[in-house]
Amino acid sequence: MYKVLIVDDEPSIREGMTTLIEWEDYGFEVCGTAANGREALAKADELEPDLMLVDIRMPGINGLELIERIREKGGDCHFLILSGYSDFDYAKKAIGFRVDGYLLKPVDEKELCESLARIRDRLIEEKEHKRQQESEVAWRGEQLIASVVTGTAGDSLSEELWGPISQRLELDWTSFRVALIEADLSEDEESAGVGLLKSKWSRELDREQSFVFATEPYVGILLRADEQGEAQWHQELAKLLKDEKVPLFISVGGKVNSFLDVRLSYEQAMEGMRQRFVLGMGVIVQTDEAGENKQAIEPGELDSYADQLFLAMDIGNKDSAFRTVEAIAERMAEARLDEETVKSSMAQMASVAFNKLAAANPKTFTSAHSFAPIISDMIRQRSLQSLITHLNQAIEGTVRYSAEHSPETIIKQVEDFIRRHSSENLKLETIADLFNYNSSYLGKLFKTHTGEYFNTYLDKVRIEKAKELLAQGLKVHQAAERVGYASVDYFHTKFKKYEGVSPSAFKGRPS
Image (cartoon, rainbow, N blue to C red; front, side, top):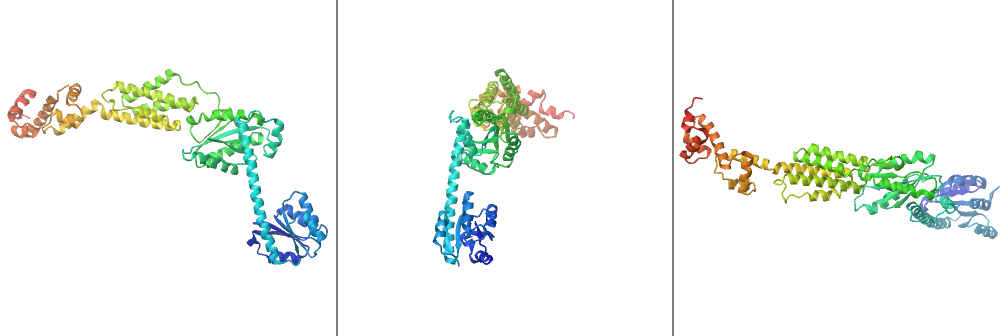
C-alpha cells in the first residue's frame, strides 16, 4: 500500500477525506493527518508519505510553501492540491512545483478517485524504474568489484577514481578481505545454483560489512576488514555455513589496507580453495592463519604405504588395510596437498599394492579380475573422505574375493563336498565341472594342498565312515553299500589296504 498524508486546517475536511474514499481500492492507506504546514513538515519527515493531499490556504506555512520546502529536501512525494479558490495564479505556481492535480473544494469524489488511480499507476512505474536503475547500478558495481578483485581490470583503477566509486557503492572502507565460497552442488545444479546463492546472500548479508559478487564457479564476498568488520565477518560466514542447506567450503584471504591491493587477498583465498579436497565441506579456511604446510609426501614414503597395504590385503586383514589408508589420508591432509596431488598419489599407492597382490596370487587374481576400474573411479571422487570410502570398499571387496577364490578356499570347499557326498558316485571330472575348474588343474591343486590324490582322499573318507558304521553293528555288506562301494570285495580290498585288517576283523575287535 502507498501512504497518504492529508493536510488541511479544517477538522471536518480532514475527517471527511479520511472516510470519504475507499483508499485500499486504489492501493493507498491514510498514514496520518496534519492541521497546518508546520505539522505536515514534521509528519512528512516521520511518515515518508507517497502522496500528500494539501490545502493551499492554511495559516503559517501555506500549501505551496509546504510543497516547496519538501521539494527542497529532495523528496519525491506526489501532491494533490485542494483549494476553495479557482485561482489561475495558484494553479500556475502549483504546476511549477510538479504537483499531480489541482482539485477544487468541495472535492468531487469521482474526480479524486480518477486522480488517485492515475497517481497510483505513476507510483508503480516510478518504483519499477527505480528498481531497474538500482539493479543496473548494482550489476555495474558488481562487475567492477569482480574485475578488480580477480585482476581482469588490469591497472586502470586509481585511488582518485576509486574514491567516488567506493562512496557510491558504500564501500569506502579502510581495509578489505576476499572470501570465496564453493557450494556442494550437483552438475545439474551448478550453473543456476551458484547464481541463486549469490542473489540470496546479496539480500541477507549485512551490506555495511560485505559485498557479494560472482566469480564462477565460486561466490565471492568482499569483506570489511577494519576493527569493526573483523569482529563481524567471522559470525556472518559461520552462520552461512550453519544455516545453508547445501554444504559449503569457505576460503578467506588475508587483510589488505587498500582496495587496489584486494587481488592479493583474492589470490590467497584461491590458494585456500586448493585445500577443499582434503579438508572436506563445512569448513572455513583463513589463509593468513593456516600456518606452514608440512613437507610433501616423498616417493619412498608412498612406496612404504603401498607395501603396508599389499601385506594387509595379502593376509586378508582388511582392518589393517583400512588403517593404512586412513594413515596416508591423514598425512595428506596434514600436508594440505591439492586435489590433483592427492588423487595421483593415492592412485599410485593403490595401483602398486593391487599389482603386488595380483602378482603374489596369480591363481586367485587371473586376467579376468581387473583392478583398473577401482583406480579410474578414484579420480572421480569429490573429496578425500569419499576417496577413502571408495578405496576401503574396493579393499573389502578384494579381500572377500581373495578369500572366496583362493586355492586354499577352493580345496576346502572340495573337501567339504566330498565328505558330504562321499557315498555317491563321485568323479574328479564332475567336481571340477561344478567348481568351474579344469579337472587336471584341480587334481594338481588337490594333491598340493591335501597331500593326497583325489581318489585316495575319497577312499579314506569312505573307510572312516565305514568304520563308524561297523562299530555301530552294521554288517560288512551294509557298511560297504552305505559308504558308496557297489562291490563288497572291492570294499574289502580298500579297507584292508588302509586299515591293515579286513572289515570283518575290524568289526570283531573288542570295543
